[in-house]
Image (tube, rainbow, N blue to C red; front, side, top):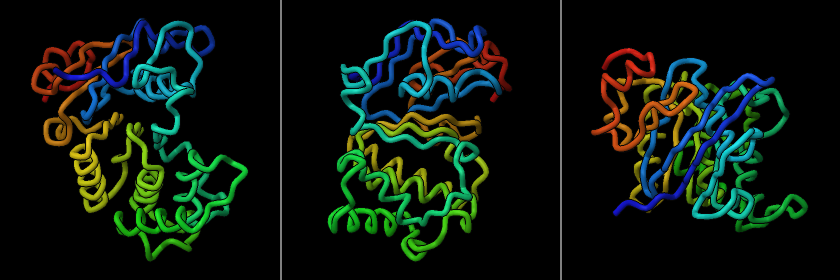
Length: 238
C-alpha cells in the first residue's frame, strides 16, 4: 500500500483577494516522482510555494511526513524557477552548493571540511566540479540548473520540490537531471516537479497532479494522465 508523504487538504491561496488556488486536496506518495502540470496561470508554482510555506494561504492544512512544514524543513529541498534567482549576485558555484549545508549548520556557523567535501562530491556527481570557482553569472542555463541540483545533493534532503527544472536547458543537462532524480527515487526519495512538456510525462514520472486553479485529477500517470483530464484542464491532447 502506498504511503502519503505530503498531504494537502482544502488549500486556498489568493493574490489581492483573487483566488489562485481553491479547495485543493492532494496526496503525494512517498518514493514517487510526481509531475505538477496545468496551463499557464493555473497556479502550479503557487501550489509548490503554498506547500512549502513560502506563500500565505487563506485556508487549508498541509502535512509533510505527518508534520507541519516547520518541523521537517531540514528534510526538504527546493529549486525555484530560474527567473526568480538573481544571477548577477556576486557568488561562486561552490558558495551556492554550500548553501545546501546551512540547514544542518544554521546561518551563523561556517561550513567545515566535511561540508566542503560533500559540496565537492555533489559537484562531481553532477559534472560541475571544474566550475566550482566560477561566478554564477558566467554560467549557461543548463549549468545553472546543474548547480541547483548539486545544492540538493549537498543538502541530503528526503523530498525534492522543483519548479520547472527542465525549462530552457539543453538535452544533455535534461538527461543528467532526470538520471539524478531516478537514482534518488531508487534510494526512497520523493520528487515533486512542476513540468511543462506533456510529451515526456509518461517517460519521466509515475504520478501526476493536473491543476487549473483547482485539482482536476491526481494519481498514477497510467490512470490520471488522460486526454479527458487534460481537456478538463484546458490543455492539449497527448
